[in-house]
Length: 280
Image 1 (cartoon, helix red, strand yellow):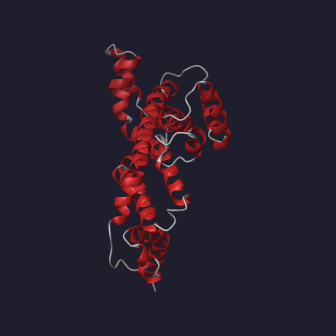
Image 2: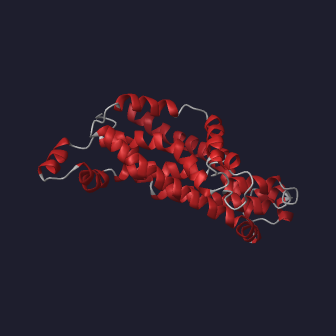
Image 3: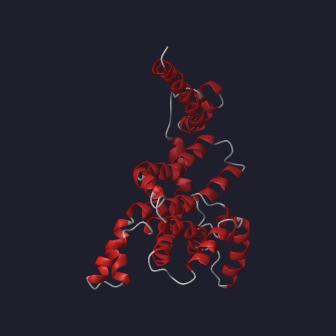
């Protein structure tokens, strides 16, 4: 029996094992989607949770009616944090990677250490700072807080790519009379598209799923409570614990932006994470 024959026989077994593992990992997602289309009476029967028989959109109507404001707040905060993060991180990475800014290596060490600081420590510190500046209970406070954690990661990702930009392009731009700002806008940013998409996507996902800053910095206002807090309050309210189809529908709606963005930007993310891995 040749090695090739053994590998051919093992291939179906490995495929079957992989399919079983994927099915087990995706079952909670299937259960959530299936439950979101069930009535409360159907959810009381365990058999209804296994098979997609019957269905209603009542849970989704309730979810949009009661959680629509929270979804909008999450969207505003996530987009704002993404824009602010890229606005700060892209020039910083450019300066560290290509302009050889003084103190670049110590700053990189600081960025790495900052990512090790527990979120609750930063949340408490930001609460005091924003309280003194009268920024609590506002979308701007959440945008700043989410950007605080996202900027170091974005700088590291963008710098890793920008160090791989060919020096010939920089020299050609300098010969054409382009300054540092023009080179950054006209040459570096277009080339760093994949890295920008990667950093922006991870920033958006972090801000969209943030719960710690949302509960710490937004105590008294319901206007800018993101969907994470809205869903938490929705489940915690005694009158809503029996409306599990609405709860599951809210969870499905809250998961859609992340799922869609990951599918659409998958190619850019793969390229952005591997860029700069060879050359530093």
